[in-house]
Image 1: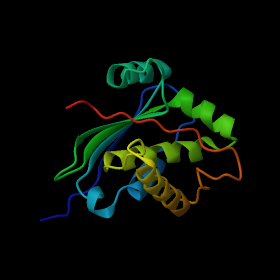
Image 2: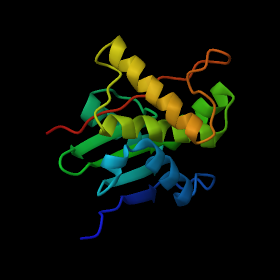
Image 3: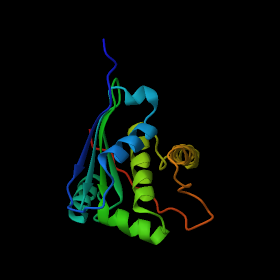
Image 4: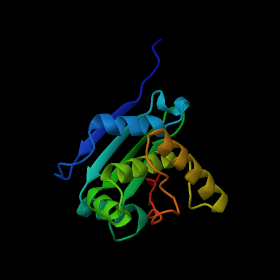
Length: 166
């Protein structure tokens, strides 16, 4: 029986031209997924405008503002299934504010969101936040990006995620 592979859908729903290529997004996703989770995972990553991000954040998190990334987990066992929604205008603002490339900020948001899909949660306590940030640092370094939480420059903006209701 063949080994199941990562099923990744990348959707560009905002009309911005300078977004990462599918091959880049796939590389970032593969790096963020634990090898046991990547086999057979079904993930969609959707790049959206502010209105769609705001609507989703309002409907699922009761926060009436666009946020940088939302994470929707549908299934974790036996296969990982979920969606990430990246708000491009917020991504662009944060990259400019932090003085980093769009690519670096986008990779960080995707890594962060995929860790949420795998059960990491920085909002459940300091120990969990520290563990999640350590994973993010390691993955970002493996991709050739700087530490997203470095204190040598402006600290990274918080990353927000929401889980779909059951």
